[in-house]
Amino acid sequence: MEELDLHWVKEDKDLGIASEGVLCKDMDDIIRRISEVKDTVKKINLDNQRALKQIPGILNECKQLEDLNISHTSINEIPEFLFAMPNLRFLSCRCSELTQFPKNISKAEKLEKLNFRVNKDCSFPKEISSIQSLKKIAVDLYSSASSLPEDLGNLKNLESFNLFIKYDEGAVPALPSSFNDHPALKKININDPFHKYRKSFALEKTIQILSSCHGLESLKLSGLAVGTEHQNLSRLSELKKLELRHLFIEGNIFDSITELHNLEELFIFGSEFRITEIPDMFSNMNNLRVFSFAGNMVLDLPPSFYSLANLTTMEIGSTGISALDNKIENLKNLESLHIYDNILERLPSAVFALPNLKILNIDENIFNKNEIAAINETIKALAQKGRKIEFSSDGQGHRQMVKRLRALKNIEEMDIAVYAKYCHAAINENPFALKYINNNKLHDTKLYAEFCIAALRKTCLAMDNINYDLLGKTFYFPVCMEAARNQDITNVFHLIKDNLLTEEEYIQVCIEAALHNRNADFLNKINKSRFNRDVYERICWIAVLHYPPVITKMENPTKELHDLAVKRSRK
Image (tube, rainbow, N blue to C red; front, side):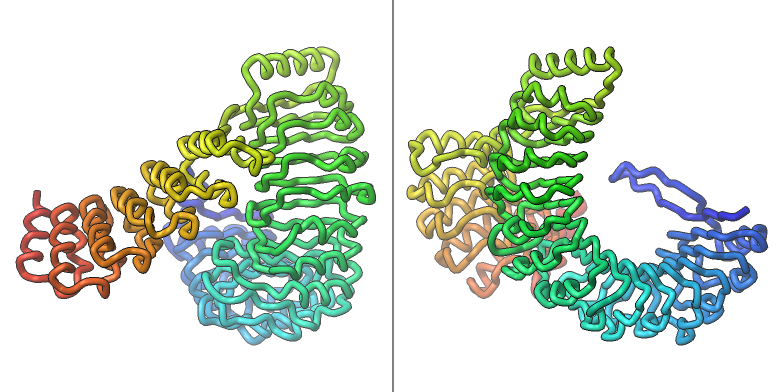
């Protein structure tokens, strides 16, 4: 047997994930299974085997072993023999209890691919820079205090470097200058999946280094705050693939990539870009095969887009696009057309004349039933002629009113009553549409307060989308009172700006929240400095009456309140 697959996936009923793989009982069970194949096995996968507490010595007898995955196990150290194994080429050791690598790591003379994890309060293992055979590195970085080794770029065979930021706060470490003029580097991926924290990243410095790496083909950046430094992307003229997701920037990201004429694949995802227009920039991008764009309220595709004769995959999602031009017939090589979550009502006939089209996805637009039926008939007719197209049209009308609000044109000239109807319809459909209201259009704070209250009646989580400057102090109190009437108020209570409320108003908001709260942490969220102990105890009495577990978070609870909480808990 060349492969021993002992990975394990635990069942998660909430996510609908079934258990999968092999669940070993203990270390002896693991050792027994490895012993049976030790002379021939080349690949062993022990991913998520929590019974694995340490690396068993039997692995040292697996002389043919090339690929070992011990990620998400319970090991806390790697024995020195592992890196001395004669044929080991791939090692994955993303382990939460691993604190350091052995000093003899440089003995891994054939190791080409290494996936590992730098845990909190740990440092990036400097010894890795001595493994000259490495071609691919993937790192889960949980330590905000860890920088990348200055000599990491001395790995002259390294082709791919993937850095995944897994801590909440702190800047993203810069690429060391040793990567200057790197002879082998082809791919860089710097990814922060927790992009809401907006971690800063020195993109200008990174691009300065990467522009000297003439073999670089692919760059992926996700979840980073880069300000105006994205403008330096134009320096990477040899890039073939660019993927940008959820970047926090200033300006239009497309203005920074108009000179990347060698691009073959371009991906732009995320509402954080706040793009409202795609410039007419595609005339010189003749090599572009894949274009994927989602999450921004652009209303049209520029004319030059329809000149991309080599385009095979087109993906446009979550925009305000309401029509495709008949010039789409120029995209003769198009195979996959995904135009989902927009406001399309019909397709141009030219779509069905595309000779290579195999996939057509129009999910979550606003096609009516008759239009969908007509498309199905057209596709059936094509199938009879030998042209099969995989067609998907689920979720028509999804978030229709929100899309219509976002796609409105000439808002400044629109009657305020008409605009208000669009706003109300969108908020009734999705309360978070509050964030799409045009602040420059509304001068009536009372009307905006009505929008806020309508959203909060659906969910107090909409509190995060309120523009306090637009609301003003006059209507802030009733808006806060509406939010307080939701049982999830504790989750957003920190968003209430108590400095905009009088002492009496703040007390009333706290009391209203205490009447509806269903979270034991509620008393930790209120600003106790705004009132005296008597008022604090009055709020606590109300909170305990309606949800006894809050007593655990009360400061110096009285015996009467404690007894009340116990009595109420028994009911």
